Every structure is written in structure tokens, then in C-alpha cells.
Image: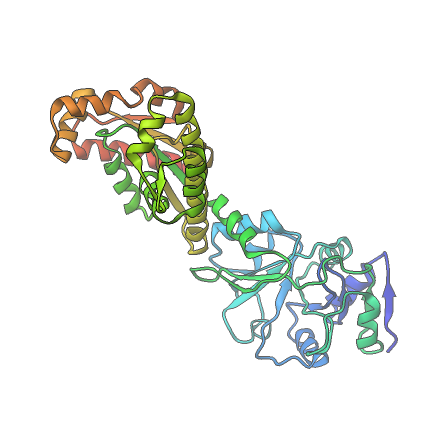
Length: 402
């Protein structure tokens, strides 16, 4: 057999693959040895020529995200999001396989990896062939992965009918493999795409609802309803106090900005208060610092939640708007209530006088602020069941609008 080198017109290569032959194809990472992924005998030939154990499954090259519906079952919405974000590119997504995927590709398992290569010639071959390619790296098992057509030729000249010569591979590292067949999601192999990029993209896919409002308005009730729906609750006030205990970068910046307020690694809150509450510029600086570090912590927790397969997040923040966290939210919800109703709730909750409760309320933002800045506003002056009913109807509307 003479191995043909194809440089431009890949129609013949697509036809060879469709007929069950093997063709080496370029990607942005390394060259792959491609066979018709729906043809069991063609896939077996890949195993044989590479000397690859059939206990090791193969991934399928596909032309785009639409292939997820064709070759997988029960794929999470986040898998489609990652495919839209990173394909074509060096990411293999492992999902539960559809019945159309031969057992030999899956090595007898119930999952399959899908990959959309970022190379125009191979993408064109995929489109022309109309079948997915079972395509591990085009090297004998144990040998270095090939980065050029010449590398492939040294391995398989005369053993395969054709090589598509797409020039040197730009990255030279295998794709990253992410298992999304069950939660938590796992990076099985970190290749050309870093894991933190994947986690960040998954966090962007979360449905995030921001809850804000003054003390005594009933935010806790709203958050409990979201928690029943499986939401991760991110209490920014609690996060801030956690950071005061262990975030040395934030404490160092506070100490540099407000000398003498951090003693032996601990923030002296009264000393800080004496500085900022009489100086609007100092208070603005404090807010910039705390919002920055709380925002980093919120992002990290959202990424962790997304990698665990989470889908819904609620951010609880009095400064939801001013901190910039509202930009992360599909919708922002302001909870408001009459002053006397709030005062009664605070008195019962905290055991304080009416006068002190009113001082706390009047030091916070007025109802009009939330009406002006939130996507939704709910009044909470009645009983709990009436409020939760209205809140859940609103959440259903938000989720359906996504």
C-alpha cells in the first residue's frame, strides 16, 4: 500500500474514512489516526495498527456542539455551554454514550469522549464524511505523539492509505479530558486547556440570582426557598468575616490603607470604624478593597460549585449593586418591607430596643434604591406563606426566562 499525502482537497480522505479506511488527520494539538467511529471493524483496525489495548476507550472527533445530541445521552446543559465556548479546541468532553456509539469505541463502558478539533482541513473532512472520527494520536502506543505529517509517515508509511498534511501542529499537547458523565466533574487529563479555564466557563453557565435588601426585610426566607431548589447560598457578609480570619492579602491591604487597624494579623474593627465612618473617601476605599476580595471568593466558590455539577446559585449581599456582583446575576431581587414591620422583626430576632432597631434601619438604603436598581422588587409585610408563594412564582418566571 502506498500512503498518499493530501494537502488541500480532503474529499478523497473523507471518502476513505466513510468506507472504513484509516487516515491520519491534523489537529491543533497532535495528529490523529482517524477511522469511521460508527464502523466497528474500522475502529478495531485503529486498535490493531497502534497496538492499543482494546480496554482503553477512544474519543470521537465531531464537527461541532450539535453532535452532543447525536452521540450522547442526558448531557447536562453545561456541557453544551463548554462546547460552545471551547470548540473547536483542545477539550474532550466525556458524557454518557448514546446507543449509536459502538461498544468497541467505549471499550465496553457507557461513556464516550467528544472532541472538535481546531483545524480547518479536519473539520472539512468531518463535514464531508458525515460520520464522527474515532481518532487517537497517530503513533504506535508508547511512542511520542506526532506533530507533523512527516512524523506520522515515519510511523505508518505504507500501512495506512492517506495522511492529511495540515502542517505542524500549533500546540503539540493533547487535549484536556473532562468527565461530565456524572457529578462532580473531573479532569481526567489536563492537556492544552487549563482546568481553571474550564471551571471559570462552567461558573459562567450557572443560573445566579442576587438577593438584596435591608435588615428585617425577610431575605432569609427568600434564600431558604432558593436553597430548597438546590441553590448554593453565598452570604457575602459571612464570606467577608471568613476572609478577615485567613485572607492575608486582604488584611495586608487593609493595614497598608488604614495603618494601625490590623494588629497581630487581626482587624481591629472599632479602630477601622473610627477612621472610615467619618470620612467618605476612606469608606469608599474600604468598600473597594472588601468588594474586590469578596468578589474573588464568590467567583472561586461558584467555580467549585459548577465543577460539582451545581446549576443554581444565590448571592446574598446588601451591597449587591455597588459591589459589582449584580453583573454576575441573571436577575436581582430586592426585598423590602415597611419600617415598623422591619423594626418588630429585628427586635424579636436580636432582642434590641425599638429605637436602636430604627437607627439600624435608617442607616441603610431606602426602599427606593432597590426599586431603582433591582430587576424585581417584592414587598414582605404579610405572613410568611403569602410571601413565599409570591417569591416562588417570581423565581419560576426568572428560571423560565433563561
